Structures are given as structure tokens and as C-alpha cells.
Image (tube, rainbow, N blue to C red):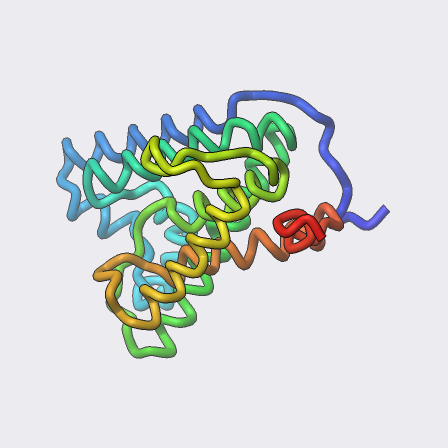
Length: 209
């Protein structure tokens, strides 16, 4: 069997809760030690990576800039991550989460260097969380999500809508300091992950074709 498609034994360890817990602990650590200090050592800054700070490709996913930042990311991880973990098993979910998050960060690293923005600091779990949202829509294409608790949207419509919005905000520059390309990279890596790891074409699942 192709090692890239070799499946783990299905087990549940509550990985989503562990990941959320680590994020909260890092955030509380930032409140105690000072958020700028935590951001400095754990956030991903391309110029620092070039000098050996490669651990930040992982740690940047656990650092957040404020209460709203971590709240929205962890809420999305809870809502979409739990059913995805139940579908895949905990080990597969952890592999998916970290591969998408790390590669989204690596892509951002390359783009920042190319743009001459080596001093930019990347923080947040959004790249991996956006990947989890795509996974949710692929696994549960008929699920209905109530956006802001009011607007009912089928999961594929939500994911494709978010993708279009991210592209628009990135191109127009209207998104402020949000790392839209990291979000899109999370989508893209998750898409390729499904093609390679599961042999599933996300487009067919999302569109029903």
C-alpha cells in the first residue's frame, strides 16, 4: 500500500480539546508574560526562520493577538473540528491539522520573503482552522450551518463563499492585517491532502457532481 494513503487505526483521543487547551494555555501565558514576548518567540517571522527559528512553523498556530482572535478560531475549531475528528479518528485529524497549518505557514513564509516583507510576524490558527472547515464541508456536504446563528447555508456554500471572500480581500487589500493568503493556503493544502491521502476530489463532494 502507498505509504501516503496508509490509514491509522481508528481511535478517539479528544484531539480537538487538546489543541484548544494548548491554545488557551499559550494565550494565558501571553497574558502573564506579555503578549509581545510570546509573539516574538512563537510567532513566525521569515527573517528569524532564515536564521534557524524553524520551530515557529508549528508554534505560530498557537499564538493569538487578542480575545476575539482566539475566540473565533477556537469556536470554529470546536464546531467543525469535532465532527471531522469523529469522521477520521484522532491521529488522522492531528496529522491533517498540523500538515495544513505548517504548510500554510511555510507558503506564507515564501510569499513574505518574495515580497520583501521578512519582518512580518505571522500568528494564529486560522490556516489550519480554514482547512478543517473545508474538511467538514467535504465530509458533510449536506450539512446546514447557520452563519452568525441566523443565515442558513449548506456547508459547501459556506466554504466556497469564504474562499471567494478571502481572495477578494487579499486582492483589494481591504482585509487589514489579516493573513488572507495563509487562510487560502490552508484551503489549498487541505484540498491536496484529500486528493493524495484519501483519494477524494473535494470539488465533486462540494458540488455533488
